[in-house]
Length: 284
Image (tube, rainbow, N blue to C red; front, side):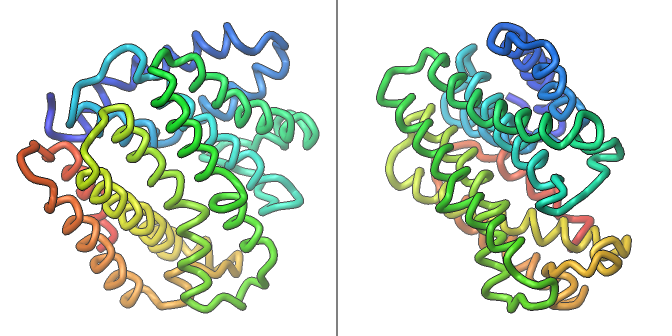
């Protein structure tokens, strides 16, 4: 097993991309709808969430063929959230990853349905993953909870309900824990569930992934602040609310908390998971 997430991604992403293509062809029969769903999946992205799931499984047990379907299901949910976030009634963004947003490319109604299709299809793929029933139920619970009205949907609701400059830091942190960190947390815990790790390890991975998810959002806010994007759009982010220096300090503190949680796990080679902290070096 490679101990670097960049090498790991090169090793596993081709199989993940093949899973997307094969499963979409098999499970989405309406060609125009499949084209709209596939468009946003293929626009790009880091594939961070499925990579984290696969990395946890690789660390504790080893990846097998069924592991790719839950990993792919995670990315379906993430992609659905991006399509819906871009809609005129939400963030009203015309560009996503340098390309026209789904609703610009296909129409608002069609984009809404493409997002709906990706969200619901994720749970069909979990049910097709050939894990024992108890593991499948746990995977479905983790993903549905993270994506639902207690977490990601709640965070987006808060986001569109608040005025641009009305956020205090506690509200902002709570919102981003729901919008961003929850799905990253689910990715790690789904990997832990597949690997059937012990309770203490599960709890530490839970802490690690929550802090990692928050750090991921802080780093993203810092990057956007440096380009001037969030300032121009009058968005309330960690960087716009705290200022660049304080946001960088907060990022360092949050990364340290994630690292501390991971270090409490003993007798396992955690170098692959630890390598993900390299992502934050440019922002700190």
